[in-house]
Amino acid sequence: MSADRATKLLRRVSFLIVPLAYTAQLFAQSIVPATPATLYTEFQRQPPAAVMDAMRGEAESIMGRMGIGLEWRALEAARGNEISVQLAVIRFQGKCDAAGLSPHRPQPGALGWTHESDGVILPFGAVDCDRIRSFLQLDLLSVPAADREQVFGRAIGRVLAHELYHIFTRSAHHSPGGVGKAEYGVRDLLAARFVFDEGETAELRNRQLRANAVEPAR
Ligand SMILES: [Zn+2]
Image: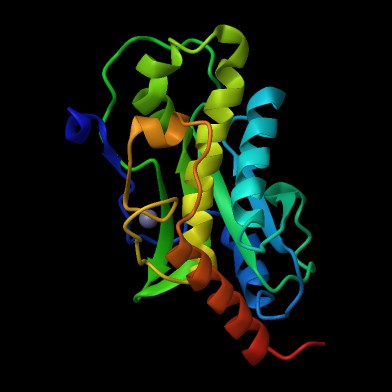
């Protein structure tokens, strides 16, 4: 039952799908230290404010407990001359909207992924809102309508945090539990609270320290 319902957050090896003109410039500048991390977002369809707020709040809460602040910017507004030590570019695919749910069985597939090239994690990832919707919709339908966008947005924020975990640890590693685990169940995404485990926290903190130690300040 749970195996049937669990959708793997499969890592996918593929080349960039975000516009290279922006991202090549952004990536080249990612070695200059500064905090917080800059998160460039690109939405296929702009989500409702309630979904967006819940997603941002959850991702900021999870990453904040790791000592990583998030500065949100729209990718289309990027000028290519911003400076940040940590950056991620995330494309949100599909409909990040809790309206029009139907009681269909979920389609299997990854809820999100991070790009890599020759074993190196790139700061580019994607979150698939359609898959998250499909995965959760049976359960979202039992959430009071007034709370649905908030609960759905929070779930998207958890998938986003998982991809940021790969990007900021620069690792394809998965942990046994918490936000860095390989598979999420419906309960993980809908629970009132969901956090990294201790190992993930240490790994992220070590990565931060190492990055700060080896990259000279300007
Ligand atoms: Zn993963």
